Length: 182
Image 1 (cartoon, helix red, strand yellow):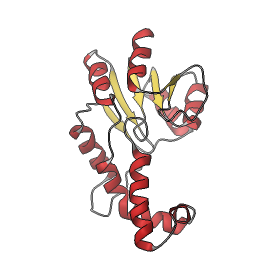
Image 2 (cartoon, one colour):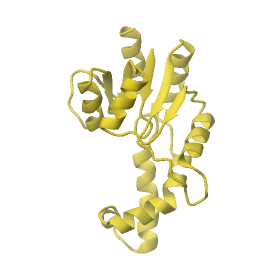
Image 3 (spheres, rainbow, N blue to C red):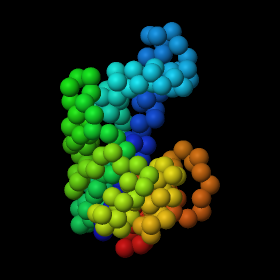
Image 4 (spheres, helix red, strand yellow):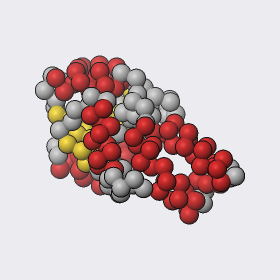
C-alpha cells in the first residue's frame, strides 16, 4: 500500500511549537500574539526568525513513530506530502534538510518527501504517486483529495470536527484502519 501522510499536526505537534515561539516573539516585541498573526509583515518576520527552530524542535505525536515503523516493516510505502515550502531558514539550512534530519532523529523512515503541497496540488500529487490512502489533518485538503477518488483519513487528535467516516483521533486508530482495509 502507498500511504501519503501530512507532516505538520499529523505526525508532529507543530501548532503547539508555533505557539511557544509566538509567545517568545510577541513578548520580545511587546505585542499581543494575535496582533502578530494578523499583521502580514509581523507574521512574515516571525516565521523568518523562528521557522527553522520550530521544525527542528517540534515534538512527535504519541505512537506515530511506532505505528509508522510497523507500517513500513509490513511493506507499505510511506510518502510525506506536506505544505512545507523548501525555503532557506535564517540559519542557512533548507526546510527539506531540516525535515529529513527531524525524520531521521525520530526514526521515521520514508520513501519520499514531497514539499509545497496544498489543496489541489496535494490532490494531484496523491494521484501522481498512486497514493492508496492519505492521512491528513486539514479538512480542505481532505476534501480535495477525497473528491478525486483517493481514500483519505482526517487525522484530528484535538477533536475539532464531527465526522463519522474517514476520521481518526490517534495513530493507533490509523494502524487499525489500515489493517482492516488492506
